[in-house]
Image (cartoon, rainbow, N blue to C red; front, top):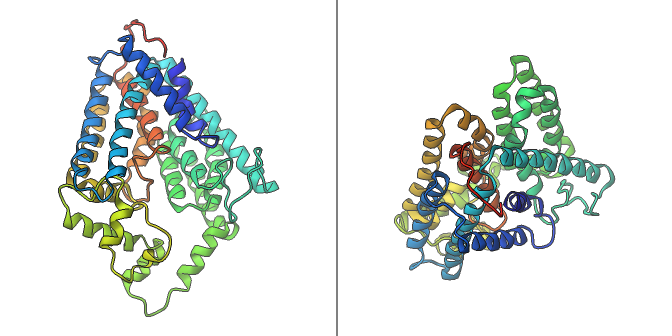
Length: 400
């Protein structure tokens, strides 16, 4: 029970002191305890599969280190991967039974509801239950100084609400509508797109009439946000004010908040270092070496990553990094497809959330960060544990 609780805390504790670092440390200590007492079965399918996935992610990072633009940053990413591999083994122990995964999904749903209600309080009264104020007209809930609220709600919604799609479809429609308002008012376009993808995955189990209602709700919320959200209104105004003689590149660049500029420089990195990249977590250091002198980000805010997972991974760890990431996705899909029907049913909620994270046509956070990678890892371990579930295996797994 300890491992599954700390797995939940990887997400639930993020608004508080130290964020995900505290549950990460506790999970690492639990992993060391399990290793010391030989409680981890490395021959079990979930553990073997997790090891393969981490090798596919870690080897390109290792290859990128010698010529990295940020040796310390690349070494830190390698250390993070090693630590989270051990944590992943612990999470597999805590999520190996159906009841454990059901418990996690119920509490993730409760967490989404709590965050959503907290967001409404912040919108109505200016501050949430913890006293956090809105940020420049954006609903941020308890997440002071960042836009993690909308991202987490949208990403976790498919997994947490998967069971409602069949048992309580009308309640699901209400949840999509209520969370949709909060996500839209967070002012993050990537979170809004994730919510649309989440709604699309959940609508697979609904009737045609219910799907129509869900689509109308999402479209109505999206349209109303242009009026209610200052952040979105400002972006629309910027697009409208684009000079008439601007090039097609500049027009698209403005619509995408200058991401084309970032991706253009990332392409230069990939062309220059296709096999090793500029180094894991070295994108910001390398950017100034590849950007032209008139690049707007050299005088404005710092570019920390490419704003897109696949572009970032390729620029930082080369084509091997991209191949490794795509292989991870392909293997997960392969294992899911070949699993027994009951295993697929148990794994489906986790697969749904992972699918929208992997959707390429969107902006995504840096994969290997202390606040985002735990979210991906928790969902991944839920998937692997469900696909490798052995109902008749009564072996001891304490302290999980």
